[in-house]
Length: 278
Image (cartoon, rainbow, N blue to C red; front, side, top):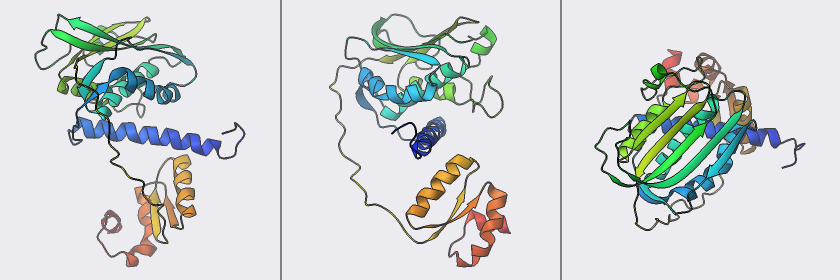
């Protein structure tokens, strides 16, 4: 779209909102072990190359991203969404360590691992592994901070800036996939995460078309839309109105109860709004 297109800001907000929702939901599901694992044989280089455009949107223009995939077609067996989650969380962590910009390097390599990575749960069998490295030129970590980075809900970020689930989710995914991690960090010189996953030789699984095209949806019902982010709320409201729905807006739960009260008589099911009203 042209830079001056009146719809460009809406589309960009759609991208950002979708990315935020995607990351948060997968973090919560993975952390709570409620997201089922669908392990497949994947080409790590292919996943990274396909993921690169979204990573560039995520880190912004002030961070220089360098992707260095191995010349070998490295394969791992894990859930595709889990692998994306590992990359996403490590990149977000690196981005937040470089508030004034910097360099971010992502590399892949095949290694003959002869030592147990520092961070692991299950015994690490020596042999062929795939190494995914994410290195930044950011602020680095003290030994004290590094000793807690994989603990759930531990964060050094300001309130509202981080959930403390990112790196703990990475640790859970990597260890469940039979791997481990090494971390190297120094104040003022940046941080490097090395993720080791068992290398496999099986052919890459070709995904089947499990999601046939759905017909365009629309309706005439009234929808209660509750969203504290005004830009996201306006975007959703306008799209739903285009599809014929009537929209009642609210910024939070209390406001939702108030604006929904006149509509309560039309509800034919018990809902959280009913209990909120009481």
